[in-house]
Image (cartoon, rainbow, N blue to C red; front, side, top):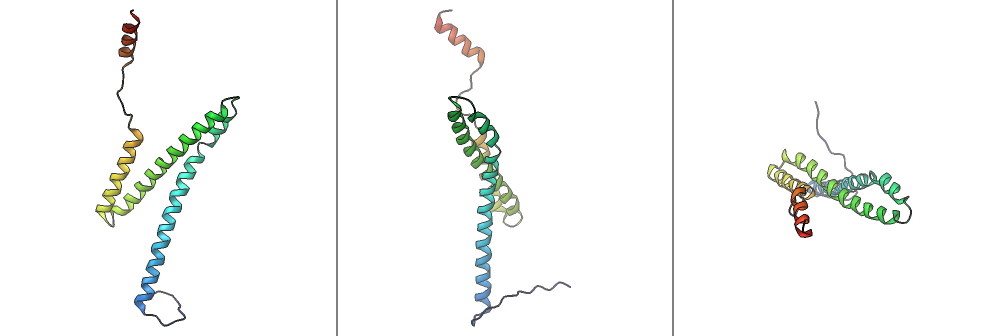
Length: 140
């Protein structure tokens, strides 16, 4: 039968509560560190997906450096948004089982980031409407 036990050695006299509080703080710090590390690796990994495209554009004479810089900035923005969205989604799914309200809040953050990434903004124009306006302005 499985019996849970804790192996921890201290050189000074401390209470059991102090030992458990210290272990709990260490566990919390480790969890935060791994979450931050997972987010950074997620964002950096998605940025690396664009590296071949950036290198190809940088080979274009005269304007390649400009195109590569613009695509690199766009890739960083996309990677930060996409990596954050995936990170929050995975955390939300995990939190739903332990704290449902916090998990639902994280799902709402995920939906907000997804909306920001897919929102087109402004007014959408029909091609025929634009052609008619151009023709009317030119006197045709």
